[in-house]
Length: 147
Image 1 (cartoon, rainbow, N blue to C red):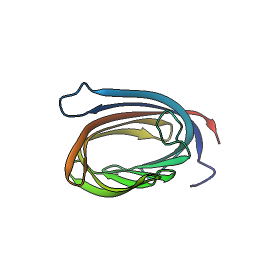
Image 2 (cartoon, helix red, strand yellow):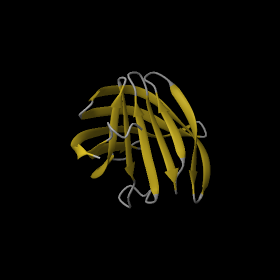
Image 3 (spheres, rainbow, N blue to C red):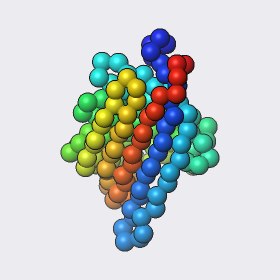
């Protein structure tokens, strides 16, 4: 990342997970991170915590005009690609083992610029081709100062 344009940000997450006929489960949390906006692409990076169950993992996101990529590296390793109307598979590695999973992206809304912004993704997750959950998450990125 270009060190001159890297910014400290406050990141707020809101996610809703629906499993078959069960009541939806939601999670909200906030954390600090780093953000860069260059050539119409936002790049976000933050450290996961015990709140998400992925403590010891760094998550990085590339927020492009037509796709969002989420990279996780640490106790959990994965590379998820979200493209509206497309299904993408990925390997999800944890200390308990690996699984091949898929994300079928229903909708992406993206409003980001050099100061931060908001990303919303609605998608279905499957494991070994069986639907696991429908998820929606919203991330809000607010600038706190220069890194």
